[in-house]
Amino acid sequence: MSQSDNNLDARGLVVLLHGLNEHSGRYGDFAKRLNANGFKVYGMDWIGHGGSDGLHAYVHSLDYAVTDMKSFLEKVLSDNPGLPCFCFGHSTGGSIVLKAMLDPKVEARVAGVVLTSPAVGVEPSHPIYTVLAPIVSFLLPRYQVSAANKKGMPVSRDPEALLAKYSDPLVFTGFIRVRTGYEILRIASFLQQNLRKLRVPFLVLHGNADTVTDPEASQKLYEEASSIDKTIKLFDGLLHDLLFEPERQSIMQDIIEWFNNRL
Image 1 (cartoon, rainbow, N blue to C red):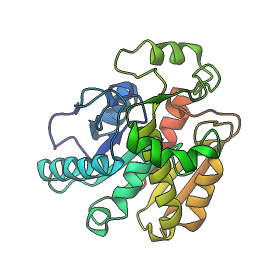
Image 2: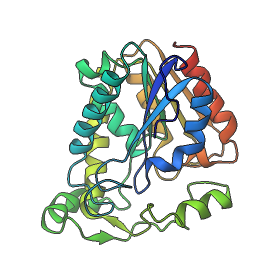
Image 3: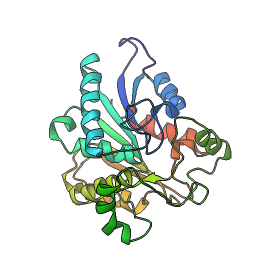
Image 4: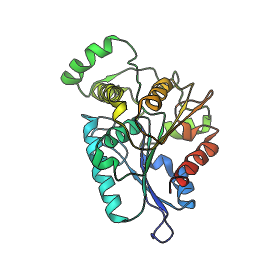
């Protein structure tokens, strides 16, 4: 979804990765704001999501999504020579972006990344899942387990935003598939062990009332990453979907200012 057509008016590029169960089309308002500030925006629906192939919300390996993102980034860069490129990732999209940035060849070509509520710390709903998930995900990968339902774990304090999300046919509203859940635990655990290897400039934003991903893990990311240019913003009382919270306009402005300051 690239909206500004020619490179004469573009000052930079943003490659956007959505979160679990959603799709890049949900970020149209954010993309328009970025366009108005001189950024061309490219969104990628990762495997099993939105317009991409595969069983809805089934991810056999998040490494496939990381590889796909690297190829997509390569194409965006070759189509727009000379323009600085940023990446934006929400939730699991944030962990995909982070894992891609641990590849020095990829990191060298990116001017910076912005992460909202990244899935760096994700607790299984019961400790037994940590033991069982690898086994069940191998035997019954597409099986759906009842996690806390969406009413029990709201992701936004804006009722209209919630209604729009859960009535969107491209948003998956069923219970999480075992393999997908296991893959999220796996990538989060991998990132936890490799935070010090991160060198890319980044801004991480997290609501401290988020019940889906852990804001303390974002704090740990901020403290442990080797990046010289790193910023964290924690928002009191805000939930998981920061760009769909009532405060979204000022959060978008924070992100755009961060991009602008690095052009």
